[in-house]
Length: 366
Image (cartoon, rainbow, N blue to C red; front, side, top):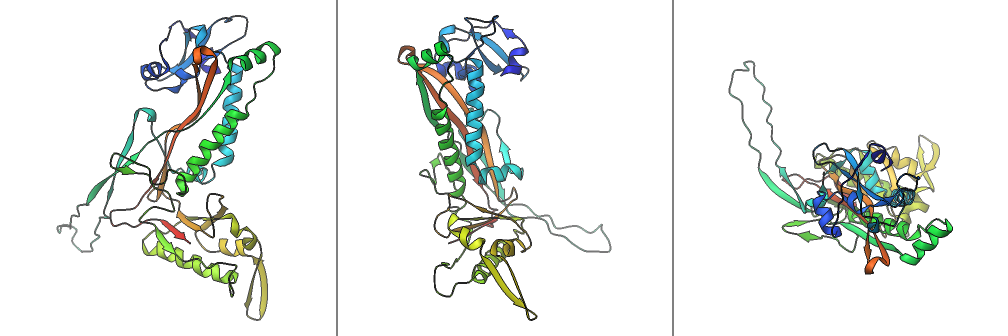
């Protein structure tokens, strides 16, 4: 926002209700982030930073003073607070970001559903001395998959008197409400990816949102309760190898990230004993599992319950996170300006994938 202001100010008065302004700005949420600047030059004036439709560059526009109450520095503080809260909660989603498994959807707020296709595998290789012979042509079989793009949001806000006290006394506003709202949004996005949110299998039009644990084409394998009689670390190792083999049989060859519920923590860091050639060695179960080829990482996720385990192939043919809007704080006035209503809003939706035959790179152990 600060860089946009340095670029210059356009004396354009953008007025009207919040929804109208949002539509006029091509759903750029910057129109709902008005700010004041107290630098001796712009006193009594308010601005928003939005993208220019023609150039795509962010520009600053002047708006009526009564449309905003927050200074520019407060918006920066809110943004930083929201970013920290979101990063602290997004673990499985951030794994997808780190692996490049995201699909950024420009102006996602204006799109209600994402449409894609899945196809059967094609390609028949042949061998001949004379390459002039006619080859076999394969035609893929296609079907269409629709994924709804709902918004994730949580509300917070300040009263007019709270803002007045802060402005007069020079005290910073309490950011705990914005932080809690941002955390709630991030947790919901994480749960939707795992598949254990209150909105599991959310449907709109002909599409449904699935997560790792409720996607119909996922592989499944059995896990033995470690509290049971006769369980050893080798029991879990064998079951993980069986789950991995199921993925290999579906031609999903890794690399894999292993997600485990927090209940496994005490067992993962306990000793794994093995006897070979008359010698006894001891390492932790965690280290022993990571010696298995293509198991790149073990993560414990609070969103998994019981003894659930996920083996996820980190490739785009298995999963992507559709990002239509990063989690962003916006504001508007209510009750005649007595309440400054805030909202954290974003569009982060999991896209769990399989091919036309139903092969999937996810194994779910329970």
